[in-house]
Amino acid sequence: MSCTRAVSCASWSRPLPDRLTAAVVGAGVIGLSAARALRADGFAVTVHERHRVGTVLGSSSGRSRIYRVSYARPGYCRLARRAIEEWRRLDSSLLLENGLLEHGARVERHAEALAECGEPFEWLEPHEAERIFPEARFSEPCLWTQEAGAVLADEALARLREGVEVIEGSHVADPSQLEADVVVVCPGAWLRQLYDLPVHARIEQVCFFDGAPDGRPSLIHHGGEDGRFWYGLVSPGVGYKLAQDGARKGPFDPELPDRPVLPSLVDELSAYVAEALPGLDPRPLHQEACLYTMTPDEDFILDIVDEIVVCGGDSGHAFKFGPLLGRLCADLAQGRPLPDECDAFRISRFVEVAP
Image (cartoon, rainbow, N blue to C red):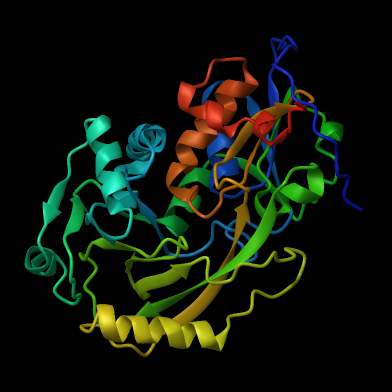
C-alpha cells in the first residue's frame, strides 16, 4: 500500500551531521539531477526507482525534448536561461541548438517576456520562417529564438546516471522511513500516491514523421483561446516528433501497465502534418505515449514537506529544467535560498485562506 501523507510545509530546521547521506525517490530527469547535485556537494546518494531508469511508464523516457527560453512569463524565461547553463555544464553535446519557431495566438506575450528578460529574438515573415523550415508552411509572422531546440533525452538520462547509485525496482511507500540525512522525493506521476496534493497524471501521445533533416528547428503553434497548441522537434534516428498538447484531458492511473495510443488522435496529427508541414510524410513512422503530472496552474512543485524536499508537478514542461530543478532540490535540502522565481512553486499556493 502507498502512504498518502497530509502536507505540512515548514522551512528547513534540522542541522546536518558531518557525515552526509541522501536518499532520492525517483530516477527521472529531476531525481537523477538532484542525486548528481547532492553527490557534487559531498553526499553519499542512493536513488530509489520503482521501475527502471528510462522506463516508458514514466515521464522522462524517449529520444528528445524541447528546450527553450521562450515563455509567456518572465520568471520562467529566467529559470530557463539558468537551466540551459546547467545543461551545458553537464554536457553541451546533449543540446541540439536548432532554434525555435513559434506562431499563433498569444505568441506576443512570449516576445514581451523575452524582451523584459533581455533575451534575443526576431520576428520573421512567413517566407523567412519557411527558409529556416522548408518543409513547413506559415500564414502569419513567427517568433524566432536561436538558443533553443532539442535535448537528447535518453542520452541525458544516461549521462546523469553516471556515478550515481540507483536501486531499480525499489518501491518507496513512505519516504519518511528512509534512513538518510536528507530525503528528496521526485516521483513523477506517482506524487499523488505519496502526498495529498492537487495533482493528477495525464497521458499524452506523440507521433514521429519522416521528411525533416535533424537540423530543423523546434516548432510551437499556439492555438486558440482554449489553450491548445501543437509542438514539434527533431528526434534523431526516429523522425520529426509532433504532438497536440492536452488532447487527452482526463486523469490517468499511472499504475496501469499500458500507455495506450488513440488512433483518432494519430489521424488528427496526420491531418495537421498534411496542412502545416506538407514537406513531411503524413503517415507516422511511430507513435508513443508518456505521462504528465498536472498541477491546477501548471506550475511546478518545489517545497519542503515534513523536512523532506518534494519536487514534482511537471505539467508537461519540466524536462528542459531538469538539471536546474535537481540543483535547486539539493540547495533546498541544505537550507540554501532559492531564486525568487521559485516562490511560484510553493505548496502554500494550493491552500485556501478563509476570508
